[in-house]
Length: 122
Length: 492
Figure 1 (tube, helix red, strand yellow):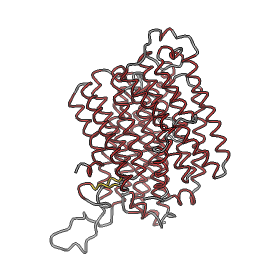
Figure 2: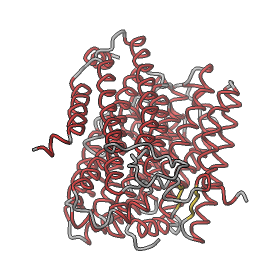
Figure 3: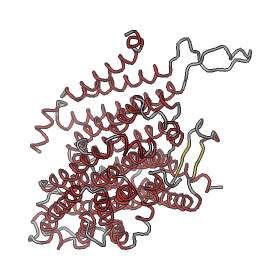
Figure 4: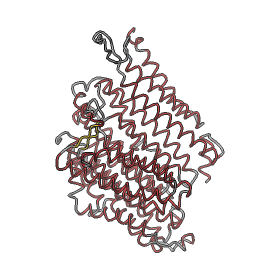
């Protein structure tokens, strides 16, 4: 039981991931879909970040004093990966919002139902 | 000197061409630059493949940091072959795009179109060439973001909604892949694919590895449009500009299928085919994709949409090869990768010619087009034969291998389903041919002339390739067999 609670950061990841995925699938408003997508992506960022976290770990920088033998180091690689993934996520959001603006100009709505109707007419 | 830097040039040339197109700020110079880059990329891909055939796998360590610490590009027969497919298609489609894109895209956006096109190619080359799993994700997103933008450039306003739906599903797929990469890193402590393949053995029964495998498979299947995850594909292909459709149909899903093949290599064929019931699952889904794609193609009233559903079916064929496994199945899937790229590229280029002259890709507006545009339609028919899988065309080889692989495992029902799908593909292709040749010309295309030479030549190059590689199979089938051996770990 305590083991399951000790992994609470992973439970948060799973809860956020499901929330995001549910919003993407269930909402008809395109902007809300993008928000859901962002929550989904952010959950994955959290997952990677907690993956690299070590209790009482410090940044893996070797000091000149030569006392690095005793220190506990956290793995910085997942954090670096997630910096890249955040950039990717921001670009995706930008492209998605640009598309929503164009869709609103062309159709006059950002609701999925209206768009489906308009598509079948044209 | 330059030969040792070929792997990085393959990606960097397209990547640098994209901002250069922005600087040029005019359509035609941007096109000239893109043509030069696409031909140089083809030369690069051929040189790399020859190097791999002679000396085995080629590696390139970034910044001099050797793998697994540094990022590594690694080319073996499998991805060398995929690079060749992407480079060959782009070298044909980019020259073609001059007239087609000028007709379908506003002139003040033409240079932007070429900038994004080069980004797409850089992303596709990058996915195929890299030996680092996180690199795969980054390049996947570069190519995906570029393809969303390219799809949205279509003339019809429905291109925008198609691009948005593609974006949502594509991003979900990519994020699933990212989760898979994270879990795999947590279990193995490395991102280098060759290294993962070694370290993953011995802990294959761990739940982390299983979860990583599941996330990666679902994510990649979304990108590859495996049934039932294919709903983004028909819209995106139907409304994108013609040249973009040809390029995406011939390369984008192929790269995702390459990634699935890489997964077989990563986790080892024993894990995929012996321990998991994946063979049965993939074969079933692939067959459903083949049959439902072919049946849906029969019902379409727009040629581009019809061919898009045919792509869903053909993705099914390639995945069927992966599902069946073994030298025959994988070889059949890989050779179909090449042959389908040629044939599907050709039919979409032919439709692009028709859109240029008729202004529509509705099936009804194609009436009598065979008399107005004889060369275009002749090339369409040749490529359609290859898609159907008529003997002596390239499309036959892959399907033949697949039938043999199914028989080898004693799954006669797979072979029977393939026959039914073949019959369906004859029917849907016949619908186009019947409209084009057995009707009086439609009033809408009364003054349609033959397509310009700058579009006919690329079209005929691909159509001729669909026949040539059906007769002389030493290049495509030979390489595919060696690539299958790489996947199965028989050859290095």
